[in-house]
Image (cartoon, rainbow, N blue to C red; front, side, top):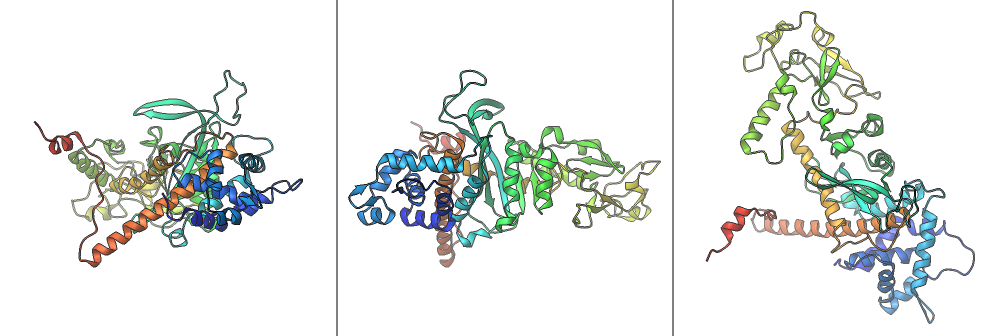
Length: 490
């Protein structure tokens, strides 16, 4: 339960300004509506904040159960007339029509996405808006309440919903009927302080549309709203998209990608001026093949395997071409030869042979020196490794530590899709209707995360004032060994 849910819901709706924006789109003919869009949105937020399934009947119950003064102030009671459920249903229906496209194509309308962005952004307190520029991005499934059509091309109650794929378990995939729900969650900077993991942007789209490319447009609009782009953390589902559909647009706006590369994109992928293109970086032509074949660590890796892997990636770093200039406005930058940069000993660069023997040595330099070996530096064009280039060398320890922040978006989905606290999967159908309910669910979720974060910060501050260290996070994962140790044997 949230503290003061009514006043906080009113504050968010008023800060966003979406109620007036939607009212301007609604028809003005006939008798004026008793229920305003502002009151409708407040009712939806109250239902979700009360951990109840977000049905329109419950929205009506939440509004009529308010105090008499609140009912009159919000227009739930006018004179002797009390708001009816049919009025709630009618207002929600006209709002749905106003936010929908005239010819639905599975993507949200411009005004619908604008309403969602403004509503979600209004749920973030001003003190946290500039807390971090890093975002963890992912998409998940959202099933439709409608039954799927009985045949291909058949009709159903939710025509914009389609069949999509989702993970059904380790190494498994299954079909579902509904939409793809994308979200961007704010995470701490690599060397920054803790920040609340607040959802900054969301989008609902049909499964027939590429979720990564569609959500890229939402992320591109962030700088226009005053939100600067920093690290963008994504999994291989985004990294495997065509560069012009995801990586290049974000990189043009100054974002730095931290990605888990798709297996089809890992390892050597041709050369550029003689340098080997591998895992988003350029490497010396004499780099050992074993090092170029390094992949990411498995989740079950032991400490010894982690140590050995980090040693190998550290050795691979000696052969990598290091950037010596920032990217210009067109995306060009210069990198230096590993030998010229003092990272390896190579006979093609006589000065490097004076380096200490703790550096790797190129035993046989190419007889016909390519441009990358004949020159100390080379210019790299933006199309080189356009899809796979990222902030840290892949799969180094630095990349692994930075990429671990991506789990924040998974935690966002775990709370938004928990039927015990947030249930938006039943009762309404259609992309616009579901999008509005999901946006309200994100607003309530951000409020809860903010309350929890501030409570924890106050607790840690009190412990520091008393000369105590901050209390460590509780370990939620309990193994079989833990259960055997704590259990009593008869």
